[in-house]
Image 1: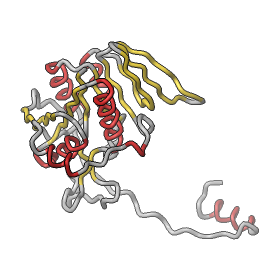
Image 2 (image 1 turned 30 degrees about the vertical axis):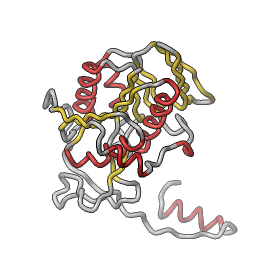
Image 3 (image 1 turned 90 degrees about the horizontal axis):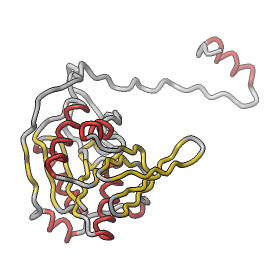
Image 4 (image 1 turned 180 degrees about the horizontal axis):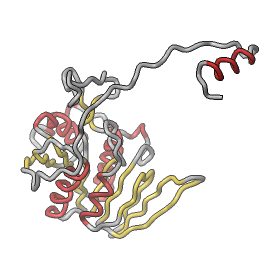
Amino acid sequence: MKILVCISSVPDTTSKINFTADKSAFDKNGIQWVINPLDEFALTKAIKLQESQGATVTVINVGDATTEPVIRKALAIGANDAVRVNLDPKDSYSTAKEIASVAQNGGYDLILCGKESIDYNGGSVPGMVAQLLDQPFVNASVGLDVNGSEATAVREIEGGKETISVKLPAVIAGQKGLVDEKDLIIPNMRGIMSARTKPLQVVEPTSSEVKVQGVSYDSVPPRASVKMVSPDNLDELVRLLHEEAKVI
């Protein structure tokens, strides 16, 4: 079985986010980059299938050369090889199109990814990949079993969980719960050393078509000051909500 795992390079959650002076782009200076956490759940699941079913695991990233340290970390975690599409992604469509092109030519049985990246939170790439490949798609999966040519995925729905069976090849987008957090793999020295010699293929993009163009970026407004009101002083609370907050 061949598995393709899509990974994004995203800012560490502790990074301070700034934009350029003209607010036209994200300021990358001083940012620590990591594997998108939801993609890391998908990667760990792929490594488990590698161990239990002898699967080969390829990671793919759409990005420029600055993403290679993150790709090497994925290789240190246990992926067999990697593909980097040499493109600075501008929107979900261009990213999905490049992933689909690599997947179509690679003959993968299963494509795993996080349901969204934590930087833009678009959540549209996995579904677009499935549509472009005309493959079954299960989103927000919290469980996955593969048996021969069939995959059984579990996803959370309002009031419970839903179990879905699909024929491979298929695209599965996972989230927290796809594997236990305690099972997430921290690369050891042996993994880090072996990652240096694992194949990392760089391919040029198939298209420059972009559907969405970012116009400008704005930081989240600073949090307003807070007034503390004693739980015994309900009249004052009502007055503030009515006269200052103007919500009642």
